[in-house]
Image (cartoon, rainbow, N blue to C red):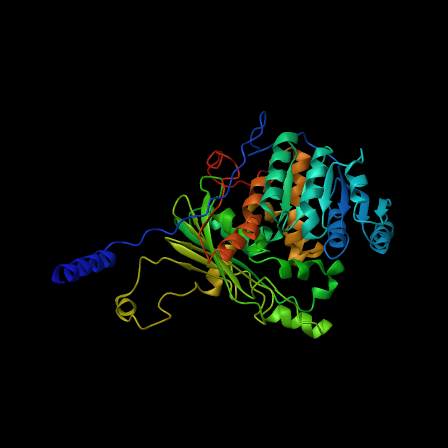
Length: 459
């Protein structure tokens, strides 16, 4: 009996002092690159002096895109497409009132876009439809010989992501996700600061999409966005947070994401909204009110992403960069904190002084933002703010897309950015459905993730 007791005690001690085994990472298959294809990292195509654009999707985002594109020299909007005829007619009337040629019209059903991608006089297909149709339109546009720009998120499933990658690699056509938040003025300035070494080595980045959508749910055609949240679980709209975070950490430009872990709350507010509007309580509503995801990279960096479209919290994309010598923060207060080598003894001694390390003063912040203003903004900032689109960042996004096409330059965002920022939708769902298990994030470049060493905005 004593021997058995001693054996049990020894086993218990071993369990206490032996580190727990790492949680098993769920593997994510990476399809083999089709024969004859190579990566499109740094892809350059022949310059297009006048970019002829077809816009597909003229609901909430499309009309604004048409307006912005017409403010850029060397752009012709040659085709307009939407399921709803009235949407097409309304935008074409705006072109006429602006003294521009009417675009060819396509409308009437959910397959009419296939006529648009075949048009011989189109260089760029600009996709602003519902999420579930984004990838298939993008794939067909490239197969039909067009460059493609797709609204966020550009893909919702892993097969869609790989289809876009393989088609871009095979056709050698640009496939860019229209992620506007990387072009916000604070994000661009902070990115430039980081690239100039002001924050030291970046070790952590945060981003989010926290935006109560109750006033907007009814504006989504055929209720597609709420339906997607009802039928799917996870961070279904991660790119606004992911884009700036991944750019700052040079993802697939010297580093890569290895795995993620996701957690969510139970769903309360969206089901309540549906019941309030329809009188019917939805069954099996999948997506939680709040989702948070942690990511670890090959180089030991971390990313934290949140999604919340139901709570009364103020709009927030978080956007934080933490480095060894500095810190940037956008929400709820814009500010920078920098490492100080000259900490006074009185301050250092008083560890209870919560203001001992705070944001730099307003005048210093202003001077820093002027000194580190991103080069791509300097010549177009005034026009961007005048034309608009979320304060001007939408115009910068469109301007940069057209500028790079006109000059035969690599785009600021490539198909691998699209894949990395969109993969949270399917991969967080896998994590959540497996009790928050870690899930592998594929190397979407299939070996080219360190071919470049940093993000560049070519000029």
